[in-house]
Length: 283
Image 1 (tube, helix red, strand yellow):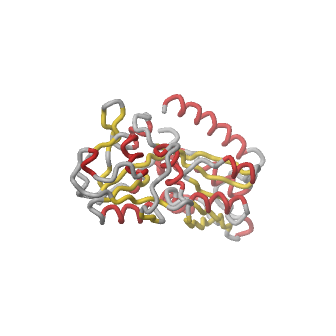
Image 2 (cartoon, rainbow, N blue to C red; image 1 turned 120 degrees about the vertical axis):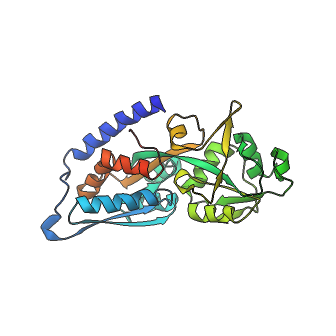
Image 3 (cartoon, rainbow, N blue to C red; image 1 turned 60 degrees about the horizontal axis):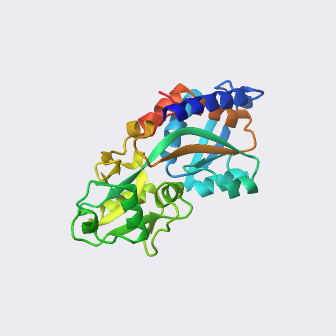
């Protein structure tokens, strides 16, 4: 991600310059002693980042509170576009159709995330190619023994259509193939982790920050070499399944929303991005 990272630093510098021009950038001290609320909604992938941002930012910024809710990336984009939230969270790129319908949407990348493929205890595999994962989710491969695993029928778990993780998975893995009908649909990264951990023959996918001792994350075979889903491998682009983490606003942000977005690009926030298992814009 070296070249992309350099480009991103340029973008960040431009964003910060835009945000600081004519907006409130002094952290601390609400107007007239009243507390200002910044409403943020959307991606369940970004939810853990925002909660740690909330704790730190409210410590640093007297008179400002963050209200955070989930619902999925599509909800976050829609809420920002309709003015229901000051900031929307999305773990997928904003679609052309969404930009066409809402041309005043502004996009701010705050980090990167890998999408990890997770399997149940009885799968019997530790690494697959992207093509093998695609064929499993398309229904072309239905037994683990077809990819060197145990003789067991594969149970596929997928996310709902509002999910940014689902959109990233469809784009990065499925390509022009459709996922099979009849898959088990779950509503969040947490639900996916729990569901696959509870099904010995299951397969699903989660953001990197949702990997824990309950998950069996597969390496992805690239040019014959298994590559683990880690932040380091996402940063180097060795791990091929990764996406942008994005905040969106309706028009150019002003006031405390602009100040918060500027803060998200600063070292304090970027260290928190890394601490939550994601990939920061810069070290």
